[in-house]
Image 1: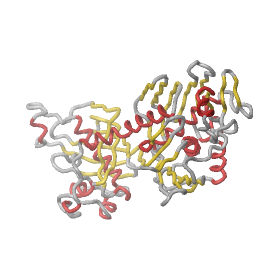
Image 2: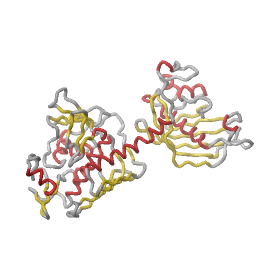
Image 3: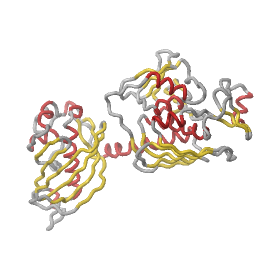
Image 4: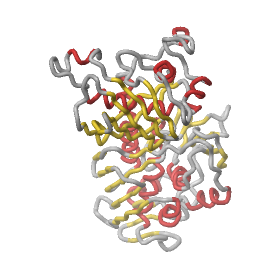
Length: 434
């Protein structure tokens, strides 16, 4: 096996050097084909078995992009832990790449039960695992918890070896089906005896190896994860199923956004840049959306794709670093006043929220790499509506970008009338191509 560097955003790939054309299989949960005693990934007829240990070593070292070259259908087992892989990674060293590292933070609890296995993951600021391991008879029950960092991974988990119960592999041994397995690369439990060529490396080596497997299998998400995993008698099957459930949670905002998003406009149908219909922001956008600038209505429409009756920004009065202040003149001619409410016109709170999202979009779209994209509103938190907004009011929208990672942005926005706060919210949005 050879570990080779890879460009940013390519993830971890396994390359079969022993096969014609050197086919690759991406380390993604979509490619998992078998989870019986180990994790196998496959693409067509090309497969790679027992990927969890090398994946755990790469994830533990926070290596996001690498090519794993193999001359067989699985990595060398070494001593049954990730120790040798970690030594190689440390010797080679890592290079920081220019792209942002996009972690996924679990937003709501996820739980699953498979037979005697129970797993869950909860929102958490870091990556934490609490695991309980035991056989069907309750022998060698162990429990361990750890906040996983590169340092704690290397010291507390990476040395834990594969273990198995003799009765589980007795048939395989008698029929010569695991000739590569020995006490050199696994710990075997027979009855109440622990068979090993050396003393246990940790008091809780069995459960720590289960945690090592969890790290490797969850890395098949393709992104670092923030959450607290709680596992009771986990398996590769349950680990990969948890990864699929997390992936579904990751995709939910995107799928919701796509449901309410019109299909992309074909290139031939797009209006020319700078025309009244709106065009792709380019160098002109870069020049107008700059610190100290103000934008009139026509310039706003060169940045934002929204049009009547859904453009909630009349002009931008201030651009300062990660902060933008804009204005919306609320007139009796707004179409929503016909029904909200007859005889008592009030600007809907959700449209104030939309105004915050649109101004936040201006902040993201000022970055050169985001020119030509659209900012789609994904979610809102800490929303408060304090006072009604009526015809004749001048709505001042003050928004500060608090986080920007890849295509996802977060911002804190406040709407004011005559210097008094009428609404506020923290919004999240995603950039997509037009």
